[in-house]
Image (cartoon, rainbow, N blue to C red; front, side):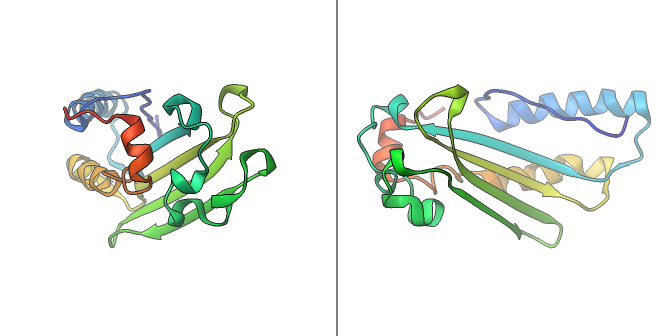
Length: 163
């Protein structure tokens, strides 16, 4: 009765996903009589696997911007034992971002993938009536994060589509 989370593998338009969240929250509040929220957040996990985009022979420095990949940029994949970057910072007076970047073996694969795990949240008490505004603010912090972390080469390989 004190926690609710939403998970999806993908969605096309934030506004549609937000409506699903708000609909479920309304039902949740009616059942559990929640007076306010202690934490509101949006968390996005993106996995970048070179082979998925036909980029197996490329170095990470050719695909990911230096501010994300750091010292691991020019180390060959087979030499990498681990990589982790973890940062948390304040966006506004009440909202925060926690970014975690790690090399992982996605689904047990031998190939190294880059996990971008980004948590956008408000840890102040939030009135029920303010949730939609907070979610919109958090989403605005997350917008364009992946596109601002990758190089034009990877962006072209991902073949983004306008919706």
